[in-house]
Image (tube, rainbow, N blue to C red; front, side):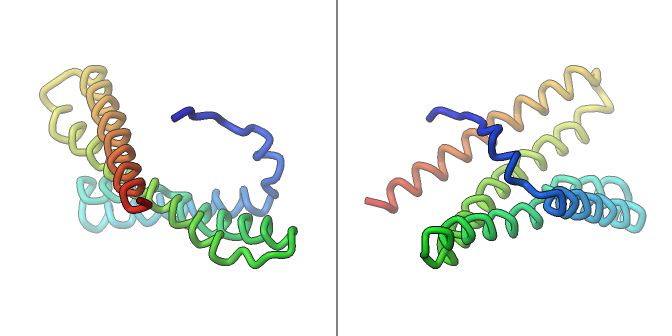
Length: 145
């Protein structure tokens, strides 16, 4: 699998879409802060693993895919939903990785150096997230046969 970035896609994002992502991110972070204030920083910190811009990006992905199909005279409702679903699957994988990162930092930081702990937690996040992505991809390929 080759990964690449399409920088030209940034040109298609409108100012109100950037603002929507910023607002959702701020609200999710604020929500985690309220939880931390009420239940303590350990519980609130776990809620920071929620990808803050996911609600905005899922709705924007659906709208963009639908608009793309409508430009060629087709109904893009299903394509938009599928694209948002694929984004949600990736987001859930990322959440598992972020929770793993948080637990490692939480448990290991009091007794070890910060650089080693953050490095180890980052490595664990990366390995787990990539492994889960490959598992999901393999299961998807099997279901297509």
